[in-house]
Each structure stands twice: as structure tokens, then as C-alpha cells.
Length: 265
Length: 265
DNA sequence: AACTACGTTCCGCCTAGCAGAACACAGCGG
DNA sequence: CCGCTGTGTTCTGCTAGGCGGAACGTAGTT
Image (tube, rainbow over all chains, first blue to last red; front, side):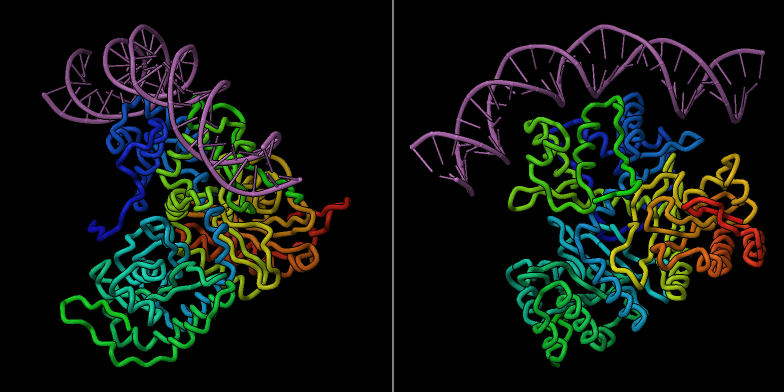
């Protein structure tokens, strides 16, 4: 499975507490596409001795981070899900964002995503699937690089990253990318601000390069920016710059020479 | 804040691995309504020494289970969210369930929930908010008792729990409750089956007792059962019993004497 | 300036967790 | 029928890793 630039949260470096490194390596051994894992598979992936594995897994089960199935295999338990829900709810954005995202989705049909910055990565906090495709290219909870993809660029730009293309993104309030994060995928993204014009996240339209091409993105740019403005207003930010950017008509929207277009402005 | 019968995943008993017990107690210290916590608050809630807390928190941060804010406070990190998304996706129900739930939601306006059994508890895997109320009474990721509430009763009944009211639930394929889990909340729930007629979860309509009263639930019972049948069919189960239950008209639907009505059949 | 509360660092003691051996069991093929 | 190989599990002695307390720095309060 060619997993493009998907990155993992799993740290390679020791954290200072061995047991936790080991315990979390067990949890990180599970990947989205996985069926439940046997003890032996876990031992392979984590490199842990079966005895230690058994002891740690016992504790993880006790804490509901892991579940032991009848046949002895392990799968992830609900504890992580519960924590994740608290994390998600703590962002306090779903209430205002989801209706806006649903509006975009039903209007355009393409997948709508919302990413937030988290350290040096970005994470997909909400996603509404395309009405066309079956399997989404990005799932809620997926971690991706900041430097790749429209959402990442927008987050970097409004986190104050210097230089190009970020200066342009800051002027135009959106970024289009095609094949940047994944060769098959393109998208356009715009920032959402909160109180004090603090960056909250990036609202995006993503889809296959076949449908979501440059003309299409140019066409929906205004609609996306209005949605971002609406979200920004609801979150206590100033929507005016986004509204004005939505109205702007730049003819400098010319893809730079090169096989991969990634432009803004 | 009167938190009704909401239960926590936090185990009181030692798991065999001290460090994990302590580390998870830090994570469990965060509650949905919490703002970020200071070290001192964490020390209070967990009972850990600040030195150990600092060391464990360092490791948790390293693993992205915790995030340290600029002012020194801590909040939950994205790692739990990522794990939770894998957990949720691993259930393989969202794809078929969400459209059905959205259909119910737009038709009825009340909140729609889907719960799965997890050990001796149930967890809300998906939820669509009511179009009326602002704050949902149940959030995604919430853990609740199995023995309370319509969803819990349904899960118990189709997990083979003996006696009443479970025998009746098995006959009628739904359960209505009012004020059982929470005095202000009522709901009606129906099972969703998969391959080999294995119970997958419980689909429910929930709302305030003021709107979701017995007559209302009786009225929407058929619609709910048809939705459950549709979901069951998509998941490889046999929808016929649910369809027949949807058609059934029982006049024995009489609330038992007592201030709290919780009936089925 | 004294006081309080907080975050952080340091260090010696000792226990909790580790690695490995040994064991039990099941499935398979010769 | 009997080894063989793969599981999962139990037990134990050794020691490194984590514990908790003291001590320190700092910021805000009265």
C-alpha cells in the first residue's frame, strides 16, 4: 500500500520513561487498515518480548486502551476513542464548523476537511466525505505533514512562516495544491480565525486531481472563502478580509511552470 | 454539574504496571468540560507527586498524548484522537450508518445516536445532534452504563441477557425509556445486526422528555425500526425481523404503573 | 519585603519491571 | 504416533529505572 506522505505519531526517540515508550509502541502498532492483531504480530511490530508484551497488554486492557477478543487477538479499545472525543470537543469548533462543512459538501459534492496544527504536523479534525467517491483519501484523525498539501500550507502561512509561498497565501487567504501531498489528490484550503484573529485551522475542499483541477478550484474559491468567513465570524474573528478575498479576481492565478501545480494568489 | 449516571473508564484497581496506572490517571484527569489544566491541578486530581507528574507528563507530551501550552498548562494531545479514529474506523459501520442516521435526523429533528457494547459499558460511537437543542446530552465517546437507557437495554437484550425486560425487547426489537439514564432525557432504541445476525450496536433517537414522550416514541417507532433494518441489511444481517417489528401494532404498549415509564412491546 | 503557590531540578533508595528460561498446548507432516 | 514449530503463558532473579522527598527558583499577592 503506497502510503504517500502519511506520517505517524510514533516517536523514535526515547521519552525518558521506558515503560510508556513500550506501552505506546503497542498502541501505535495498530494501523487504520488493521484487523485485530495476535500477540506474535504485536511482538514483531514492537520488538518487545512476549512476556513484557503480555504484562503491558494486560495493563492496557485493564485501562480499556486494548481489548482482548475471544480468539486471543487484540484490538484497540474505547479508551483512546473517549480521550480523542474529549480532545476533539475541547477544540470547540465542531458546533459551528460542521453545519458549514455540510453546506459546502451538499453544494459541491466534494470532500470537505478541517485541519488544525498540532506541533509540526496537522491533524484532520473533521471530515465530510465526497458524495462521489467511496473511500476517502484522508480520514479523521489522520496526521499529515505541515509542509505538504493545501491545508498544511495555509496553517504554516498563518502561523507566521516566512517566505514564499506563504507571503502570497497571507495576501490571498487561500492556497491551491495539486499532487503535492499525494499525486492523485488536489485541494484548496482557507484559514479560519477565532478571537483576536488567532488561527484556528484550515477549511479545505479535497478531491481527486481528475475532478478537482485548477479551473474547478478557481471556481469554488469564492465559495470556500465565504464559508471560512462565516466560520470565522461565528468563532469571534473578523471575517472581512476573507470576504474581500472571496470577491477578489486575480489573473495572476497562473500555475508555475513544472509538472506539479501549487499556487496561490 | 449533576452528571447523572455518566461513568468513567478510569479503573480504581491496579493493573499490574504502576507507571501505566499513573500515566493513564493523568490522561483520565481531563474531563470533557475542562479547560487546560495546570500542573498543580493535575497533582490534585491524580494524587501524584509533582516530580513524578512532571516526568510522566514529559513522556506523554513526547508521545503526543498531552500538549504543553505556552503558559505551562496541559491539554490532551492528538495521539488519543488518532487512536480513537482508528478504533472508530475499525468498527466499519460509519460508512453505512451515518447516511441512515442523517436521514433519520433530518426527518425527525431529534438527536440520533449509535452505541456499541464495550465490556460492561456502552460507548457512543456516532451521534447526530438534534436540530432543536443546542447542547447535546450525550457526546460521541461518552461511556454509559449498560443497564440504563434505551440503548443499553437493547444491547443487553441482544447480548442474551436473561429475564425481563430483555425477553420483551427481544420479541419487539425496540425499547423505550424515559428518565431512566437521565431524568430529563428519553429515548427509543433498536438493534442493528451484522453478518450471522451478530449484534453490532443500538441505533437510537434521544431527546428531552418534554418532546420525546411516549406517544412521540410510539409514532416514530416504525421509522426507527426501518432504519435499523436498512442498516442491518447493509451490514449483512437479516432485516426481516426488524421490518416485521416495524409493522407490528401492539396495544399492550401501556406504561407500567410508577413514575418512570420504561416499556417495550 | 515577607509570603504563598507554583514549576523545576536533583539525588539516593528500593521496588517494579525486564529478559530469559521453562512450560503448556495446538496443528501439521512425515 | 511422534517430533517439530508455532503459539500463548508462568515463574524468577537481577538490576536499572522510576519514586518521592528535599531543595531551589520564580512569579504573583497583600
